[in-house]
Structure formats: C-alpha cells, structure tokens
Length: 104
Image (tube, rainbow, N blue to C red):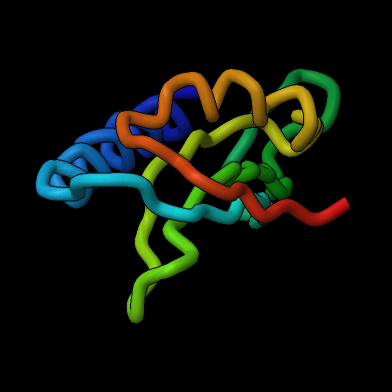
C-alpha cells in the first residue's frame, strides 16, 4: 500500500527532526490507534464501489515533557498486534528510554 509507505516515511523524517536535540534519558508511553479512510475500488465481481481501508498507527511518545511528542511511530495494517510490534519499535528508538508506560 503506497499511501502507508509514504506515511511511514513521513513520520520517520519528522520524528528524526524532533529527537535530534534530545539528550539524556526520557520516560515514554506506547500505544496504538486505528483509523479508516475511504478508497475507490474496482473488481470484475462487484463493479465500482466504495470500501473502507483501515490503517493502524503504533506510537511511542515522550511521557515526561510538557508537550509530549513522538519518538517513534510505525504505520501498519489494522490487524497488526500491539505486542508484536512493540519489540521492533523499541529497538529502533534513537534515544535512551527510562520507564516505558503501556496499557494491557
């Protein structure tokens, strides 16, 4: 899905700029949210119509600043598990993380 790849690349560029000046250890929180967007689709079986396309954003944000900001984000299909994505996300965070706050 090209839109998902473009969104992922955008997030990584923005996050790299935000964390460039962070020093020391920060506390962080991780969670995900899903959203939908409508797309046009064409098939032989159904003809022309609309369908929902879902994406999911897995994010790690700072937890001990006045204005929290992303330190890592990953866009996936809606069926991606939070637990399965967390280890890979955490290993790619470019700063030192002290405490990590998670939901169940």
